[in-house]
Length: 114
Length: 114
Image 1: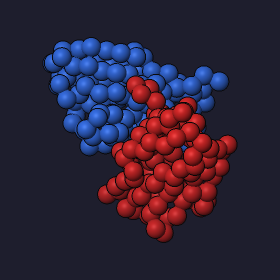
Image 2: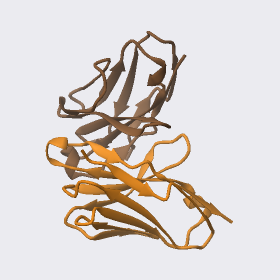
Image 3: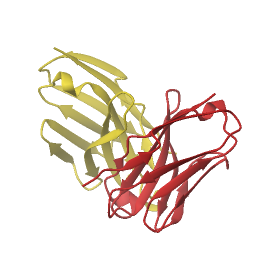
């Protein structure tokens, strides 16, 4: 059974800092891994999708890496801004007969203060 | 292009009642998944539909059911509501077969059971 863990559970940083959020998964047989952000009381916004054959993906100030062999993914946020404050979730997709099922971590609550 | 829409956005029901939630995927998307989000359990997978067929189901009691229509719109139904069913219900759509594509989430339906 796939389990996804995110560390740290919460992070508070001053504006402008570069930061790293960690995601680990127990079953390395994943098809892809997706990072989301969630603002309070809202739905999930997709940030990056990394296929199992890829090592990293970049979008603007965000960079996500994937190391299947070690069961780890990281989300790097450069030059953080107060608008980045949200909960960040990673989700693993095992593919195959799991089809659309994503297994989520508990999230990292990020606060960027001015 | 319109995103994933969910109706209603908020619902208040009493124990024992039943409820139907609706999800309209992004135009052209054929896969729809449903998730339950609670503070204690986080995001948990309910079921996934593709071309009107349920391909995967999470570990929820039979009170939770769903269906998908020929236009890819999906509904989920919860019968005999319990207090523990209070949650944010999220649906996600993807372009093709769920595990191959990025998933996009709607804003959710907030269900409160009194």
